[in-house]
Image 1 (cartoon, rainbow, N blue to C red):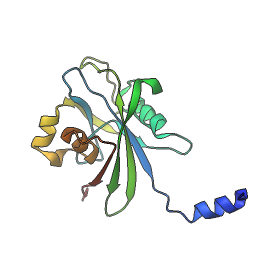
Image 2 (cartoon, helix red, strand yellow):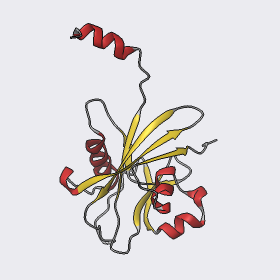
Image 3 (cartoon, helix red, strand yellow):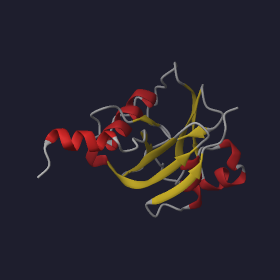
Length: 158
């Protein structure tokens, strides 16, 4: 049996990887709710960083509420897939969840003005027509490649 200090010492030698989480909210037509953040050159799903002490599902639900005003609970979403994201500056995991019931286009959406510029529902076909406008997790969704794991480079923001 390992002592607590031994375990902590061992874990300190491991590579920690930041994680983010997002939610795929689809309407009855199969279009997904996407957000355009002020600080990103592309459209993405509602989501953000997993904070200390949170599970990815909790982070996704918190971010959805903060960014759109839409409040769901854990039983409303299921795991969809995870994206292993790699860029010049970081290597992260993005956990994606899917709402288990469609969201209507008329659902009240209140954007977090400090971060989010606009929102829209987008079809997979629209995404596939111009991939450069969409983040990696959105591209995975549009391809239908939601088998549980995907590897995507993060486009340079420069």
